[in-house]
Length: 93
Image (cartoon, rainbow, N blue to C red; front, side, top):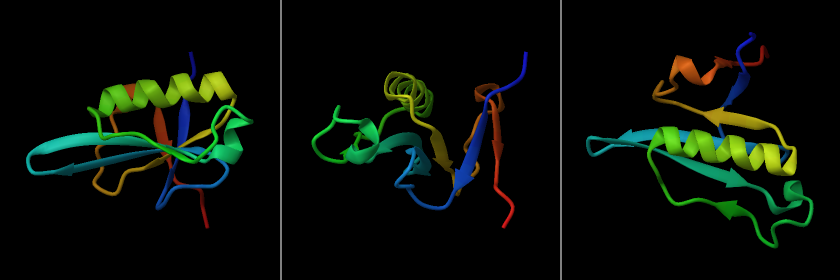
């Protein structure tokens, strides 16, 4: 079975759900951003989740993406991505 592929980006994208991973104060967390326009009427305003454990954020982003049929991109400046989630790649410039 082929692994899921997720594009790595440097900032939230207007045309995708963005999963942001970060670490600080001895903790790691993930946060989900979804533009209201992308949600096709499911959201009135842009959505930004509270910080949560990275695996929970990943799972929530996948559920949301499946629900609204939207792509996911990942902002991961500290290299916190876990290989068992799929392949993280960066689009060539």
